Image (tube, rainbow, N blue to C red; front, side, top):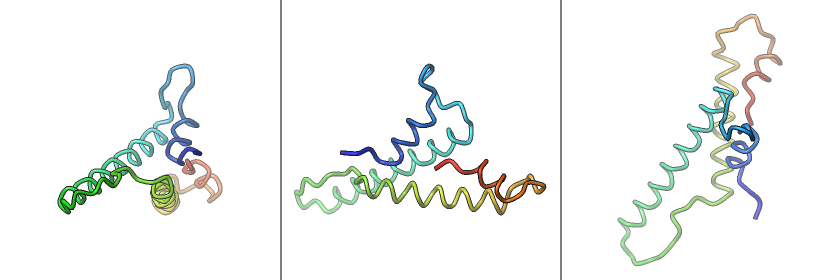
Length: 102
């Protein structure tokens, strides 16, 4: 099975020698995405527990759900970088490329 986009982003931004994400923007975005993923999985598990119907459905998000989460967060991040960038002297393409993580 192919990896989800969160795994791909983590792999792409991780220094292979140190095993750390050195870019602070990428690190913050990955932390946010990981937290959102964990929160959604906890919410899913909680709803299954409260249903208490004896089902054994997975409390893990599907690859498609994770990819959708990544798309939504990255889109919001790029838009916020463009509209709320403190560097007003950057042209759009410079601002966009510096904010684009995905």
